[in-house]
Image 1 (cartoon, one colour):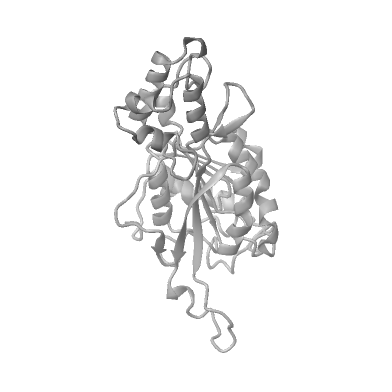
Image 2 (cartoon, rainbow, N blue to C red; image 1 turned 60 degrees about the horizontal axis):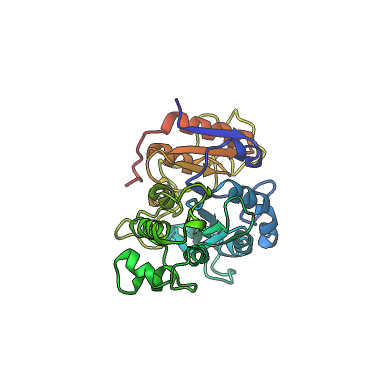
Length: 343
């Protein structure tokens, strides 16, 4: 049984059928007129992405993350829409394709800028918001909920320190309402939950409950925070050449599969195929084995291929029939294989 599915059509039609994502890898419109439907300029990219962002937000959990590929100005136009829908900016990664991206493509006599050899891949987490009461549509930031629930128990704030066995760190870290707020680790949260329900006003129990029936469990609390598995030595500048070698996928279907978009005279199947090594990097950083990766704008489905090769499950969509067939062929023939360019 395949650990992947590629829908031929708009991802908006199938998001509701996909399993809940641990991470989403977005590599859609750049606002450069690169394919039918891609705006000619980045000004309207926020509008282009809006229905997808709304769907991502609807189906995400508090632990879902997002990797957003684009140009610098393209991402800048989409960022406000992401924030409005509850996505929290974490950091920007820059893919530096190197001087090889310039050679032969620039007339040094007429160019009026430094050649652009970069793209960005921006990492987002979900803004941690919790319903003020189970079933309520009124949500607040998790840091406010933590403090409000303690206040509701009738306990003075200073007793949070006693609950955690510290002098003053608990109230200072976990009840702070500013930028110094810390998400309580599972062991700390377990102590706060137990203390509030053991010593708080009996009439208000349960305290710190998501369902109104029982206090939040350690597993439920752990599931509210996104994953990040850091690999030592990796920074947010990714020096990696654009693909020109054996990893550049052309596929046996390229002459028979109809395509509404033809990159060049059969020189490559896709002009902006991402290196598998970079997809490995982001998927390894943000997911664990068997978890779900969404790739709404598949192209050649590099993120999905990386996901299944790393023991995850991939869900992708691609509008173009030719690219859909090529991506399907690629997954069928290359899953589980290694490439020379892959570390």
